[in-house]
Image 1: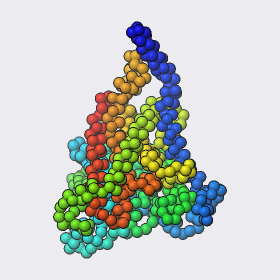
Image 2: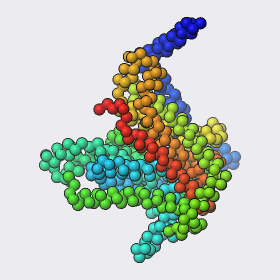
Image 3: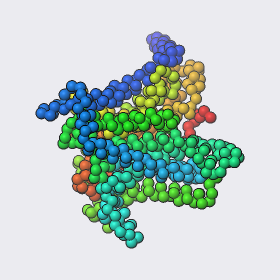
Length: 303
Length: 265
C-alpha cells in the first residue's frame, strides 16, 4: 500500500519534471502560458474598450429616443469642426497642458539637479521620499487644499494681509487652475528628471572640463542632452495628466476643459456618448502624436 | 562644478520646491481639526469632533467600504497579471514584444478621461450594469502597470542564470518559481501591491465613469466639496485618506530601497 503511494508520488513528480523539461525546451510555450493571460485580458478589455470608443465616435444619437444609432458618419466631427466653442475649449485645454508642462520643467529641473549632484546621499533619500509622498497621496485632497488656500479668507490672503499686501481673488480663475495643475503634477516631472541626471557619470563631466569646457558649456553640451529623455518622460506625464483632467476645472476653475465636455456628455445632463467619444479623440490624437515623438527622443527608457 | 552662488541658489530653490509641495498638504491636514464650520484660515481652535462625526456617518462608511473592496480586488488582479506580464517580457524575445510593452503603459500614459470614457462605452456596448466589478476593472488597468513596472525593474537586476541553476539542480518549473523567482521578487511584489492599493483607493477620474450610482470614498468627497456640504466632516475624511495613502507608500519605499539579495553588477 505504502509502496504503491510512494510510486504514485514518484510518478507525479516525474510527470511534473517532464512537463518542466518540455516547457524549458520550448521557450515559446513558456512565454505563451505566461504572457497569454495578461495579454489576452488586456487586449479583450482595455484595447477593446479603446476600439469601441473609436468606433462609437462615428455613431450618432437618435434625438427622439435617446438611443445610440449604429450608422456610420462624420456628424459628430462635423459639429466639432463647425462649433467655435469646441475649438476654444480644445485650445484652452492644450494651452493649459503646455503652460503647466513648461512651469513644471522650470520648477523641477534645478530641484532634480540639486538632488542628483549636490545633496548628500542621506539628504537625497529624504528628498526622494518628500517628492514621492505627494505624488501618491490623495489627488483629490491636494486639489481641495488649494481650494481652501485660495478662497477669500484662506491662507493665501491671510499671509498677504500679514505682509501688508492687498488681497487677491485667484479662486475660480485660470490662474488658480494653472497653479493647481502645476502643483499636483510636479512630482511626476521631478522623478524622471532626477533619474536621468543621477545616471550621468561624474567622469563625463570631468572629461568635459579637462577638454576645456566651462561650466555653462558642460551643462549645455553634456548634462542637458543626457537629461533630455528624463525631461521628455516627465512632460508626457504633466501634459497627458492635464489634458485628461476634469476634476481640477470643476473644483478650482470656472471654465470648461475637454474632459468636462466629455464628462457632461457621458454622465451629465446632456447625454450623447457618441459625441463625447468623438471629442475624446482630440486628446487621444494629441497624446498619440506626442508619444510617438517622445519615443523618438528615447523617453520610454526613462518612464 | 557649480560656483558658490550657484550652490546657494540651487539650495534655496530646493527648499522652495519642498515647501511648495508640502505646505498645502500640511494645511489640509490642519483643517481636519477645525472647531468652526467655516473654512477660514487660521482655524480658530482644535477639536477631534469631526472624526467621530465622519465615523458615524453611514454614507461615508459605505463609501469607505466600497473603496477598500475595490482597491483590494484591483490590487489582487494587478499582482497576478502584472507579474506574469513582467516575467514574460523580461525573459523572452518574441515578435511584437516592443509593441506589447508600449501598449501596456498606455493606461498610465493616456489621459484618465480616455480610459474612463472608453470603459464607459465598452460597458454600454455590452450592456454591463455598473457594479463593484466595473470599478475594479477600471482600476486594474493602471494598477497592472504599476505592479508590472515594479516587478520588471527587479527582474532586470537579477540574473537569469539563477533559474537555470535551479533547473540544473533538478527543480521543476513550479519549484523554481516557489523557491527562487518568488523570493527574489517578494519585496518588489509587496511594494507594487502597496502602490497599486494607494492609487486605486484614491482614484476618481476613471472611477466616476465606471461606478454608476455607487459612491467610492473619493466620489463621496468630491460630491460634498462641490456642493459645499458637511465640509468639516469632509476635512476629517480627507485627513484619513491622505494618511491611508501615505503609509503604504512609505512602507513600499523602504522595501525597494534595500537592493535585494541578487544583483547583477
